[in-house]
Amino acid sequence: MNFFTAIRQLYTPVQPAVKQSATQVTYYEFLPAPQLQSVIYCYWELKTTQPLTDNFNYKVVADGCIDIFFELSNPEENFVMGFCKKYTEFPLGNTFHYVGVRFLPTMFPQLFSSDAAALSNRYERLNIVVPETASFIADNFSSLHGTEQIKDLFDNYFLALIAKKKFDGDNRLYDAIYIILKNFGVLNIETDLNTGISPRQLRRLFEFYIGDTPKTFAKVVRFQNILRAKPSSQSLRQNKLFFDAGYYDQAHFIKEFKNFYGITPSKAFGR
Image 1: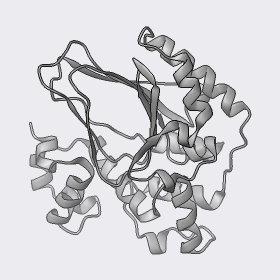
Image 2: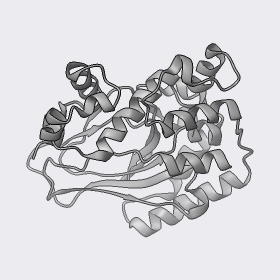
Image 3: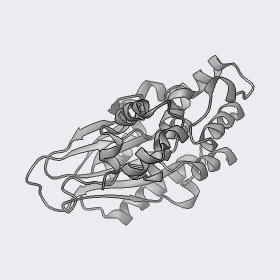
Image 4: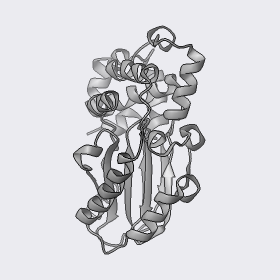
């Protein structure tokens, strides 16, 4: 699984820290067992520490990943969120405790033999996509579980799952992903992804395993690279970082960033 390990080393998907009602809402990511870390980027919890005065809206930015998630007090209602090419906003009420599993790019389809394109830009009930995993969550999780118990339950389940699974390490697909990640999404898709198959065939592989085209995935990688860099709004204006990131001009950069994040770069990185 060398290609899979490379994805983990080259890609660090970022979700912004919770700002709204920050003292009453916490978001926490924690690692799976080492044997799972080339497949699962993290487990996560999003929860209220006390009831909120107002309902909470949680914003998920584009990160190239597929997530399983559910409310810990109601694990029978579990979902999978596909690859998204724009931000998504979830109204969560004024008290909640969500738990999730974030899979690295290509890994959900590898693990569950599921077409990622069928889940793109939406979420679906998990029992429709992977009924066995949906049943495991419904039968084993409860609001009584703490973080360590959640991790142990997930680890044991996914370790048993990958032990029985044969992964498809198609070099043509993973060579292309490697090129995109190494270049931080800044490349010419038509000329720089010559991995031995036609653009049409490569597109089909990306749509099945990623959920969208190589071009869209590269845009998300480029956006995520900017999030990790955390530039100040001043440096964005003065240093013209949008050119270095492969954008034609500032207007193009702002438009694409807002599509992926929901707000402008100056608001996202403003101090």
